[in-house]
Image (cartoon, rainbow, N blue to C red; front, side, top):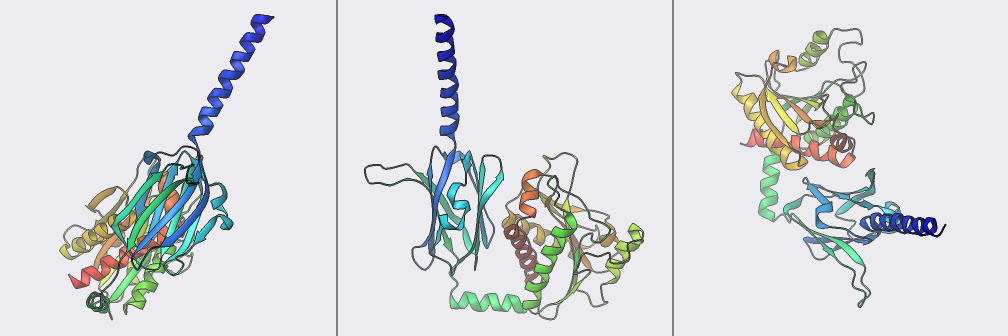
Length: 348
């Protein structure tokens, strides 16, 4: 009996030790404070309890958004509005904190203007009991401060798309949902949101934007063959179309496949130039693996008499990228990237 009790006590102690060690590895966030230090410098301070390492934090930036995926952590109180203090509301316009997958916290921030991407730095400050300072994850970044001359230059670039005829094709739609992610995200929904955002930005810049669809519908009809449906998208283009861009999400049976890529039809140097610029901007703003610029015989490229490119934003069949594709901030970043590429195409 004594041996049994000794064995039982040791077993309980061992299990509790394992549980305590596992519990200690996970950080729980308590408070999130966003501060503006001066005209261009900002900090995000996230207080936490538990253990957090530099390697647990993955940061992505893209023009007007900042995304943090933090492993071995839970959002705790800051997943609620009461746990977030935003002292820079004029610049940091939207904040989201939640759980994307088990034991991982996602923090995303949207900005009123672009930030300097190479300015983003972060540190983990350990708890300082002597000075009553909790452990904190501190992120520092700068916003782009545009001088008057820069502002004038940006205005002239925007004017370069004035009266340009640009056709934006939101891939799939209606009876064709396109690819479906593991969590149920539909390609046709992602492409439409991004396309509508592109339409607004380009229209605001003075372009004449023509959409193949602005709602969840078939362009030809629900009964149309695949080739007839795709031809209907090409037929939307008026004779004076300057460029055509088709927006899609990639998919593959292997969920580890990831990244973005752009396409053009071989034999069109201008289409290649557009595809290259789209590729550069999508890589810059999305921060995903760049699969490069490729040629393809996609119907909307091969049968299109105009400068045309097709973009694959990311893999909807990849767990992480599906979460990004369904995130408003990431969709906005993709739209901004496409618009920047269009402006560069007419400017360069």
